[in-house]
Image 1 (tube, protein in one colour):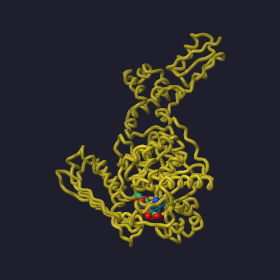
Image 2 (cartoon, rainbow, N blue to C red):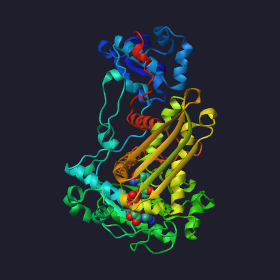
Image 3 (cartoon, helix red, strand yellow):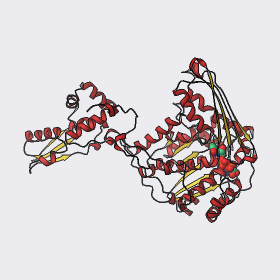
Image 4 (cartoon, protein in one colour):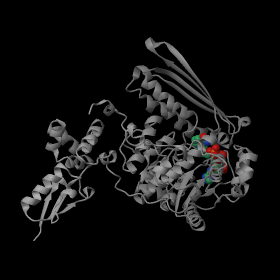
Length: 557
Ligand SMILES: NC(=O)c1ccc[n+]([C@@H]2O[C@H](COP(=O)([O-])OP(=O)(O)OC[C@H]3O[C@@H](n4cnc5c(N)ncnc54)[C@H](O)[C@@H]3O)[C@@H](O)[C@H]2O)c1
């Protein structure tokens, strides 16, 4: 009878060895030279290495085993065993030990790579095969600029500048490894050629007419050459109610109770998917900002939400109908405006229950983008802040909608929150305990989409001496927002294929008011958001997290 020996600590089994003593000797040889053992086996020995991943072990334990267990590794490194035990317990080998361990492994003829130090994502990512339908709520300036840009990128007549998924790279491993692939080659994202667009809008203009009216893009250079394509995208009738967007009124609207409207949107989603032969869908709210609403009792559970839907309750805004319909149909949802929408417990829970990723709110494009990059600098340098006055002039339809005080309040709340969370006045009362923060948006038609945003920032330094920073950002709102729509659509689709559900906080990078778990405060610091996003991509692909500690480059081997 062949003997079967296991040495759990080594993660190996030896079969068919002639004697137990012989098997033990094989195991010991394995512990000394794990990757060269198969060469040394006698013909009547068969060596089986169990896939280490099959065992319920963490990354640190697996590495420790490869060096012969805790005491063996402690001896090799000249460290106390309690240190190695700590690694096994926490599942992490600290970053400064990773390079030394990799070179130790090399010396012993073993292969140990950066990716062995991280837990791979337990959910395999489904491939991005087939067509991805992007359903846009609102076919205005942002949506038409986004669609046009994607079409130009596909035809090679424009570049998708501003899009991290299309232009960005991601560093992997140590700086010495020189690995920085394009993000779109690193993670499996849908290809631009596989995107199909649909939209709803209370105005019947197709994407061509919308693009011409918004006049974001140069008509001759960027609209006429793709006119046929844009004319083929006609908005479906919207679930719209002027009570929620006071300055608009369009004829292309659905009729019915709120329940009926939600069911009609669900039917639209299904029809769009089958008519356009889509394999997957995502929905992005690019519609106008609704009036300010706070979370209420109807928003707490799915039961209360659906009861309110059936009762035609005022607290169920049209944006909630779209989000609800998307989640019920298993379609990921991103909210580009500051409306409450899916940021209520009932819909967050529905997203989790249905296995659908969601994110929001309010694209972070112009002034807030600048604010959330500058404020972390002030805090990092411990420079004080007395006041931050931000004002804008804007002449597009969004500006007109925001001219209504009730819609402006929604936007104002979204814009005001960021400084408090970044500057943490409770930790630094001397520096940030008394900040006057003001945000204004002024509707000024001559400017159209070409917004101008001014910031006057009163800061103070050493011994309290005052200084000022002035910013005048002559930006183009939709030019900044369009690449965000693309990234969000592609990343939400990726998240869904990776089995991620509920709030996707790693996409905070794109939002002024990032949706977050009830137990934590939102992360507004742009650079922390960027690290979070890239580390999530590394985690998804089983790559090492980058801590930026970097001590290993200065340690002698
Ligand atoms: N452009 C930016 O930089 C930026 C940044 C952050 C947020 N946003 C937000 O993005 C949204 C879109 O901006 P925009 O410049 O394209 O505005 P826009 O006014 O040009 O387009 C919005 C479209 O949504 C439509 N709409 C309104 N209610 C609707 C409903 N219930 N269903 C379907 N469609 C509806 C409107 O008719 C309009 O065509 C706005 O809420 C804006 O506040 C834009």
